[in-house]
Amino acid sequence: MGNRPLRLPTGPVGVLIGSHGYLGQEDREIGFRSYFRGKHSEFKVLEPVVCCDDPEVAYKETLAMLEGSQDLVGLYSAGGGNQGASRALEENFLSKKPAYVCHETHVAGAQRLDRRDRGFRRCS
Image (cartoon, rainbow, N blue to C red; front, side, top):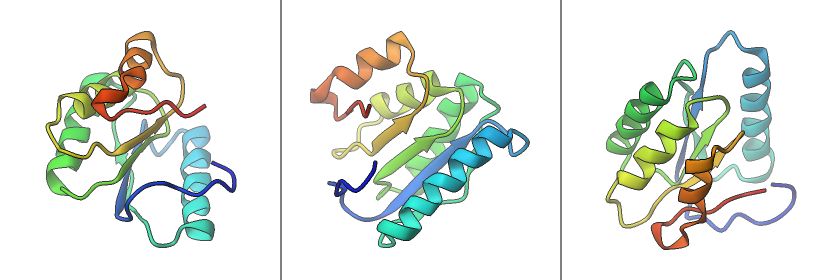
């Protein structure tokens, strides 16, 4: 993300992690929070939701986040389960899709992210 300005409306940003026991994912979450705290304090980074790196759990948890926060502007997936999270975002009928940041993009997810008409953007 560097020093580039964020082109998002301000609001809550959801976080998915596989487990609180995965130190690599904890480090990613800490770095993500630190970025927003230092450069974009107008955003509210929500508490992480555990998805056990399972696509079906990530799908259900992402839907729950979208239903619980209609003004969700972003979602960060620090671990696995990206197939489920991206599927939930694609199937959701919000007029504005939240920005989605993840690691290890899979083939189906890359195809979803490349469909600009559906509100997805790939960040490299």
